[in-house]
Amino acid sequence: MKKEEPKEEVKGLDPRIQSAFAAGMSEAAGGDPTAAIARFKQAATNDPLTHWAHYNLGVLYERKGDLANAEREYLKALDLNAKLSYRAAENYSKLLVRTGRALQAEAELKRRINAAPEALGLRYALAWASTPRTSSTTRRWSARRS
Image 1 (cartoon, helix red, strand yellow):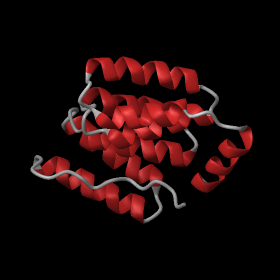
Image 2 (cartoon, helix red, strand yellow; image 1 turned 180 degrees about the horizontal axis):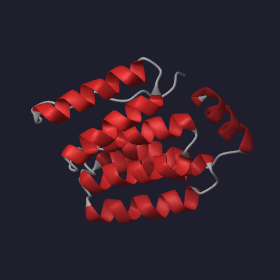
Image 3 (tube, one colour; image 1 turned 90 degrees about the vertical axis):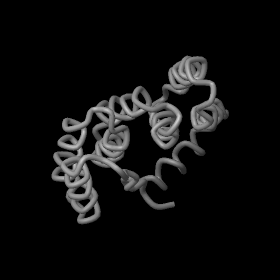
């Protein structure tokens, strides 16, 4: 399984945001996560409601091994748009499970489902986080993400 890639899913946005987002996608594709992070931060600054910018920041921080910032950005994406940020929910739950915090992931996702019951991605992420795992299963999953 290949690494999670940033998603290009912004249409109808302000041209400054589109420009920063496109530059971030280009930098990420070119293998420069530091430059891509700067571009996505710019996109998020120009429009803090752009949940995809925060999702992409989470992916890039996770790729760099900065799990605290990855977790923060996934949660920001979910705060901004729980219904459309299903990838953020999935990545958030997998990050917490991978770091031994499955119960925390379950509690947070249940809280968010109560607030946004129509957000089916949250239910999928909760099912994933709630699935019992052996340490060998977690190691295999983590190895595929690397």
